[in-house]
Structures are given as structure tokens and as C-alpha cells.
Amino acid sequence: MIAIENVVKVYGERRVVDGITMDIPKGRIFGLLGPNGAGKTTLLRMIMGLVKPDGGRVRLFGDQQPGSDGAARRIGYMPQELALYPGLSVLENILFFGRLYGVPEAELRRRARTTLEQVELADRQDSLVGTLSGGMMRRAMLASAVVHQPELLILDEPTAGVDPLLRLKFWQWFNDLADGGVTLLITTHHISEADRSQEVVFYRLGKIIRRGTPQELLKHYQTTDLEHAFVKATEETGGNNA
Amino acid sequence: MKARWIALRVIQEIVRDRRTLAFFLVVPIIVMTLVYYAIYQDEVAKIAVISRGMARLFSYDLERALTKEKNVVVAPLSIPDDEQDPARLEAMIREALKKKQVDGVLYFPERLITDRFDGKPGALYLYVEGSRPTLTGTVGSAVGNAMSDLSAALPVVIDAQCSAKCANSVNNKAIDLKKVYVYGDEDYRLVDFFLPVLLPFFVFFFTFLLSTISFQRERVRGTLERLLITPITFTDIVLGYLGGFFLFSTLQMSIVLTYILMLITYPVTVWQIASLLVVSIAVMMTGLLLGLLVSFQAHNEFQAVQFIPLVILPQIFLSDMIWSLESFPWPFRWFAMVLPLTHANAIARDLMLKQLPLWQLWPNLLALAALFTVVLVLLGWVGKRSRTMFS
Image (cartoon, rainbow over all chains, first blue to last red):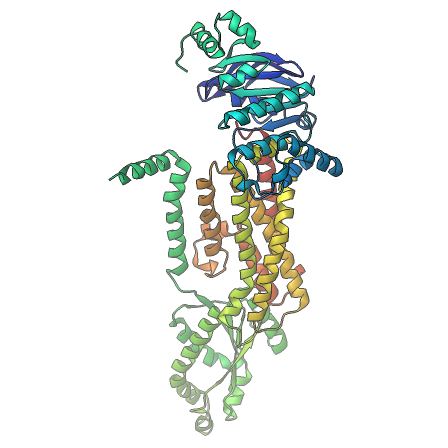
């Protein structure tokens, strides 16, 4: 699904992404866990073709280049910020993004209806996004990111600032999507989110410091929670001065 | 006084945003320079004096009197001395005025002398270009003053040239000054001069402003990032913005144009209105592309807003909109050539005041098209980097 080979990105004298090599298989929920400023968003942007690597290469869906038309059609993206048009209604936002991906109109409207029901926003579909609460906006964001039925869904801190109940719902939706064959790449600095991923990468200072399923990581670091596992992994690779 | 901490924070932010700081310090200098050159001297009118036969006896004194007038220079005009045919002479004078070689031509026909010998007042002709009321006024008052200075000396000149018999009949008869307008007439008001350029100005100003801000908003709220990862191309984004703004710009154009037409007093044809709309649409598209270009270069809303005076103010000063470009030193005059409104204003005035057909205005149209192309190419170049603009 995603093949990353020795990718490097340098800003000034800082190696934000420092020789990352990894592959992400299809249909998995893949968590990228690391502190703020670790370079997670930069790595995501390289996968989406928004940032050009200074070294190495990224291949998607076999041999497609990030940013290519073919790859773009198969990716959905939910950024950290509430990237919707506040002057448009929830439905209008979803239809707008769906149209950009070339989904036929009748099919798009059918999918928009289904998606709105899934994220429990059907009754607010005509509300302007600017009038929604933060949690509703996040749900509208998710709906607009999946309406074109992407094969790869990239989520940057998807439940940041979301209350615990809604977070649980989000994870239910993520699992449903993965069950449907969608690959989810989630960046987070919340341990609880990484815990729910099927596979986790500990990411620090632009480098992968450990990869495995949550169970494998807990076993490797002989601990009961991922937070301690991450701390131990950090200490193992040279302290915690991130 | 907690306010000091807010002040400190504001200072720190501005100092660290070097581009904003540069704008903050440089824009006033640019504007002050423009204001200085715009108002430090009055508009100077160029007047040529042409005379034939014995009328040269008058013209010499009047030319000398004109040189003493303020805001006027007497300029030579390359019309052959042996050209005597009045019709051809008038055609040459009109051509010189159309080409802006001079702003006014004072013509002393040969028959002025014979008329005066016959006891008639005789007529002098003042040809003015006419489209710029301020210059027409300067030329008219300078010639009027020079003629009143001349009237005292006139009988003496006549005395020396004709017998005592004719002198009595000529003395004390004021020469009739006939004004001939190449464009418009004496009813042209200052407001008529300004009204035509308001349409391109408003269209450019608002389109540039809205496209700069709208695109910056896309970037700030993260929707630009989302747009750029979709399969749409950069051309789609630009065309989409053009299409979206076209509707509202056209509506705005219609309102401004209707208002202008209600205010002007001279007749306007449908063809003139259609031509002005075509030019305004070209200005709208250039303004929109320039707004997008500026928005791409600005790293935040602060910088985007600073670009607005930097792009708009020079066009107010240097596009011949209010102040004559002639008042500015040559570097400014050259710079004015790369400003869309310089050409749009020239076209608007030539269309409305001089009533010239659009095709005759091809140099300005070509310049406008060239500027549009340059902005488009620059935007295309920036667009190539758009997918990696988050680097």
C-alpha cells in the first residue's frame, strides 16, 4: 500500500525526517506515535505529495508517485485543523469535496447521505459548518474525507480535542472503515489512540525507534501500557530530550 | 500595567516577521515619494505657436508673452514653413495634438492681418487637445493672459506696419480668439475626465482585494492543503476562482457603469459601453490572477494585507488616474508601463472622451494582454510548486 524507502527531509540544519524506511500493508490501522514536532505531519505530507523529500522515495498503491492524479484519487485526508468551509452547510462541504474527486452526482448524493448517517450528522446536514460545535465539525470533516471512498485514509491527530465518548465513536468508525478494506494511517501523540491501532510505529526526532503491534511492543518493553513502552523506547535510543 | 506585555508580544511578532517589517517601513517611503512627485509641481502645458505671412508680426510678441506665463512651455512643432494650405495645416495641427506632441496650438492665419487692415478684429485659433480639462484650462488661461499683455503693444506694431489711415480702424479692436477642440468641447468638466477610469479602478481594486483575501483564507483554514491533495489541477483552482468572481465582478461592473452613465453629460454609444466592458473584464482577470499570485507569496494574512497597498497605491498615483504621469521622473514613468491600470485608464479615456474605436487602442490593449500573460506565467510557475508549497 505505502512503501517508504530511506526518506529524508531537512529544514535548515534540522533533519525533520531522517532516513525513514517502512511499508504499510493494506487494510490495517497504522498508528504513527510520537511527540509534537517529531516530524509526523511532514511524513504524512510527503506521502500525499505536498512536501518533496530531499532524499529517498515514496511509492503508493504499487508504483504510483505521491501527488500523481492516480494516487490522489485513492487517498482521503483529515487534517488536524478544521479544514472545512464555514459558509457552506455540512452537506455542501461533503458534496464539494466529493465533486473534486469526480464522484458522479447521483452516487455522490447517495454516499453523502449514508456517510452523514454514519457520523450521526444527518439531522444537521443543512446547518452551516460555522455554526457547529467542535465535535460536530470533526464528524463533518471525517465525512468529507471519506465520501469518495478512499483506499488510504490519512488522519492527522483525528481526535485531538474530542471528548471521550465521541473518541470512542470515532474509533468505531475507523474500525468499520478498516473492516471494509480501507488502510488508515493515523498520526497521534495520544497513547490511547496508538493503543487502538493494529500496528504502531514509535517515531521520534524524525526516526522510527520501534515498530510492532501494541501487544508486541508491550511484550518487548515488559510493560502494561504503551506510554511506558514509548518512554523505554526513547531511553533506549538516547534520552528524552525531544 | 499589563499592557506592556501585550506591547512586547506585538513588537516581538512584528520584528520576527521580516517581510511585514519591511512592508511596514518601506511602503510609507514609496507612498511619500509618489505624493511628492504627484503634487510638487503643477501640470505643465506645452503650447506651439504657428503663424503665416504677416501674422508673424503678432505671433512673435505673443510667443514672448506666453513664455512668461506660469505652467506653460512654448514648444516647437515640426510643420513645414511653406505649408500654406489652411485645410492641410489644420490637419497637421490636429495630428500633433492627437499624438500629444503639444497640448495646444495657437494659430495665426495670414488673413488676420488683412482683416485688421480692413477694420475687422480678425481671428486667432487656439487648438486644444481637449480630453484633459486641467490642461485645456491651463492652455486657455495662459493664452488669455498673454493676449491681454499683448493688446497694449499691438497698436504700436500696427502703426509701424500700416499707414495712419488704417491705424485708427485697427486700434482698440480686440482680436477674436476662437477655440477649436480636437476632442470634446468647452462643456467637458473635470468630473467627465475622471468618471471613465473609475470602472477599471473599482473592478481591479475589489477583485484583487477579494482574491488575495479569499485565497489566504483557504491557506489559513487548511482547505488549500485539502484542495491540493485532491486530483484537481492548479489550473482548475485558478479557473474556478475566475469563474466564481466573474459573476460578482460583472454585477459590480454593471452597477458602476450604470452610475457612471448617469453622471456623464456627453453622449455615449452602445459600442463604447461594450468596449469598456471588454477592457474591464480583462482588468478583472488580471486583478484576480495578481491577487492569487500575491496570496501565494504571502506567508500569512498579515503579509497578504500588506501587499494590498503595495499593489494598489502605485496604481492610483502612476496610472494617470488623478495625477498626470508627466509630473513623475522617468523611472516612475517606465514603471507605470507595467501597471495594468495605466493601460486600462488610457483605454477607458480614449474610448469615452475621445470616442476612439477599440481597435485603434491596440498598443494599450497589447500591453494589457502582455501583462495578463506575464502574471499568468508567473502564477503557472508558482502553481508548479503548489503541491510542495508546504515544504
